[in-house]
Image (cartoon, rainbow, N blue to C red; front, side):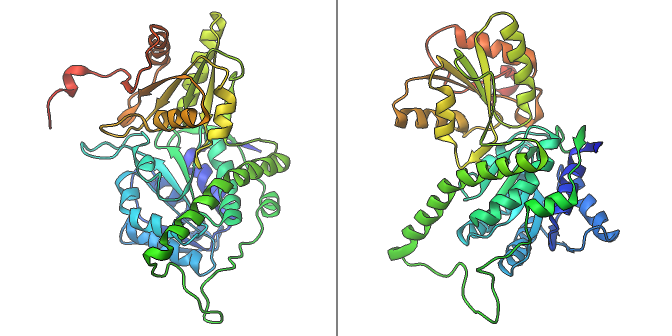
Length: 390
């Protein structure tokens, strides 16, 4: 059954079908609609869960941490400064290997204050130890929530589902609804073998000395590396159950082409249109979307890019004083693999600025202008407004 749904409602419907026992909430634009829908489900007895209003985002993620440690499936959502206020606990959850699922409704980080979409919030916590999935559409957001619980509970690692604020959370798209019985078959009842219990007392997140801290972190890193196979398996199992396939990457005419665009999130829609236009003009171009950013799918990505001449990375976040985050990681992966490939990095869409087909086409023409890679070009920047401070 297809239905026209707001992105936030699509996510809330998927969460409801996964039957979490605990939902912790603190409102921040643009994730608030997700939590509002879940609160209504609880009030209408469509979802039997403890709905807890926290005093802050730090409190919300702490409640979820305790709930999962005690053996309950749980959910929360946040964005921007709210996500950053959670940072301490995000590291705690990952370090304790708790299978938490949360949504980041991607939004710019202040100052200046901006409520619109870019990826600076989730990219700021990319090293916290969470698997990060970035979705393109409302359908993918709904489907990926179910997969996120599957991945988290099989890896015993937390999963952050990143969806573009407003561009997805507040827009309506036709969505194929999921069937409750099929979801239950796909996602068994949650059992956490290391749950805290008075009957079998033990400790999670205990103190560590220099003699063993490195080993704990290394084990966490190994689990993250191995999780790529679970992300793939979750997508394959979902395809068998629901008929829609997902993996580490989403590729569009990416094999044996001269130029490949690489991007994340809803920007892929614009990139597809540009690829279609350029291919109609005889240009050898394709695109790859990173659906999974953590763990970074270096091997899968290199397999798609190694026969190309150039890569154009379009990303909605960057590391101030350095370069684009995705472009930097891609260049590092290429160097480690001994692959010589021209990588142009472009920062675009910060603070919700439109990434139009014209902007992407201009970037493509710039990439053809010379053999020197663009380290971190800022697409469509207004130079006069960017000068000076304040």
